Image 1 (cartoon, rainbow, N blue to C red):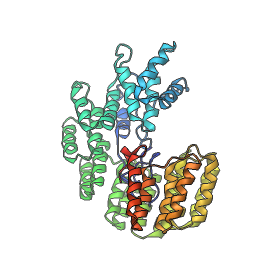
Image 2: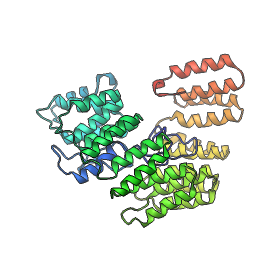
Image 3: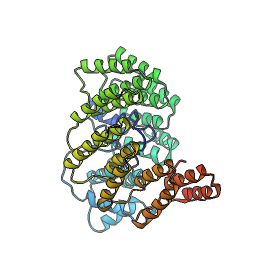
Image 4: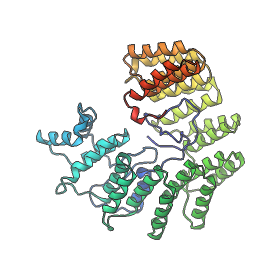
Length: 458
């Protein structure tokens, strides 16, 4: 998951998101999912099975027409739980069919959707490879090609994504394919290539809607080139290209990042006058984040109340933001109130929810409350999330209680958890602060040797 415009620019709000700091803006990475939803509204021609793309907050997922859950879920679980993942998804699919059960393209696309949802990009790409090797059975559309390009970029890098793009026939390269490549450039922060590709898209008539401009505004926000965001908005207005809610949210982030409450409020007033858009909860969480950064806490809390009034359906993500942002404001009463509302609506709370409230309570120095919530989490956790332990360890180290942080690692192991690289990094920094260099070096070695260290940056 997305996906809003108020996340840390270095993380996405997914299983890897961290709430240990106030949640700043994130100009949403308008990836293939976001780019393609509008394409499928504009261009309904699909060569194979319908593979439209989902709403913006479902980062990287594919949205299909409603169908009953069949065997796709069992296939997904087999792939996710492979004892030897190096064998690849294709092994699971081949074995499934050898058991006498033929797979449909819809089921395979649904498996891809779920794998992408949980960022298992390599496994998702292997499913497409398996289909590509059976071209007589599976007719892949330009939407499929766009998804593959997106996956290739994430798994193998931008050069491989470019090579895949070049391998496609000109007839296949529609606005979805160009949009996927544009997003890959933006994700890699290749400004020159992104701007050049956007020019090509302009010449082909692929920039008659907001999405490619939103992608570019995302890039400029990530690069802190805020003046270029205003330039993009000006171009859209000059060409009568309708701003959508995501355009406005990025624009709000831009003005707020410049420290201009007045400028942000002017954008919001323009947004309210635009009858084609409705401010969403992300709009107000963005404004709250910016007001907090400017020290305007009353306005921040007013925006947070409006966040709550905009929550629709059974969406957990807004509650994570509310918990985090009320922690940034320092409003203990509201943290607990939102937490109780959250628990009353959902029968179970994911690890991210516990991470959000514990982080906020530690931020306001309510260590007793944080430890109570932790004890509440332990019996019901789906799995032990070391990031939650790391919150406590970081707190103890910052308070000068290094021994308690060390003991907490022993506790993590006792309850079945596995320390990660950030765990050992915290201890290394704690020992460095106390001039215990030998021990610090030992913990740094543990950090680099820990499982998943290749995805860790000290």
